Image 1 (cartoon, rainbow, N blue to C red):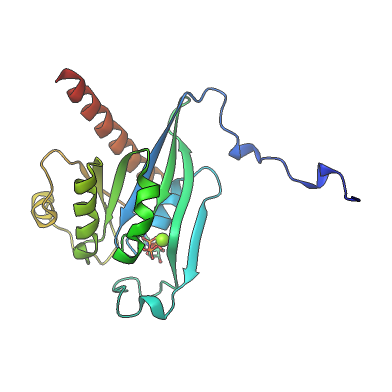
Image 2 (image 1 turned 60 degrees about the horizontal axis):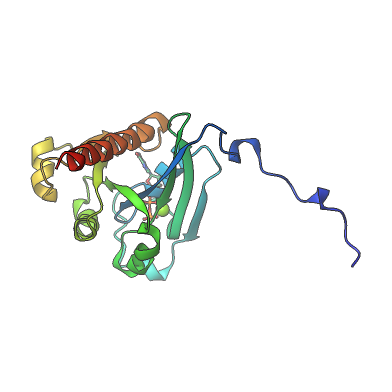
Length: 206
Ligand SMILES: Nc1nc2c(ncn2[C@@H]2O[C@H](COP(=O)(O)OP(=O)(O)OP(=O)(O)O)[C@@H](O)[C@H]2O)c(=O)[nH]1
Ligand SMILES: [Mg+2]
């Protein structure tokens, strides 16, 4: 067959190549209700161009997905977001964002396979959109941290009030962030890593 040589196929971009010092990779899932900022977080923190599966919002979500507070939002994730961040020379995190609405739960089985932990994003204007997500993580026994995505007009609650409203166990870390900021999203992931580490240390002692 007559075709041009493979020099037309682009090689991997420099930022896509893992540093040769990478020793461990950890899979982390970013979850939360509709429009809480999952795609924004994966996009802000990823060092590779994130993969997203956003579609223009259609009739499917009307009356189902409460758009309150994100009225300018025109696209929604229909499968997953994917990104990657190296948190040290040795450790790389693979990030999978996935929708929390019930009609997407069939995706969870595959996405959570091998995941060490999760970040649950919360919008305090619509706490209830993340209730089911927390319940499902607890059922699956997936350790998670809660990150309150600080939208400007969202109410601020004392941490203990939020904990009670979300029915969180005392040891589950809760932090506030603006997921549009890379450093803050990274801090959330570091909180999760420290939490996973503390769990593994306490399990090793048992
Ligand atoms: N002001 C402000 N806006 C934010 C913040 N995070 C996200 N947004 C905006 O809020 C909207 C929702 O963010 P997305 O990242 O699409 O949320 P999502 O959780 O991926 O949404 P779905 O995939 O539809 O469930 C977008 O218009 C963002 O630009 C934030 O921290 N502050
Ligand atoms: Mg999304």
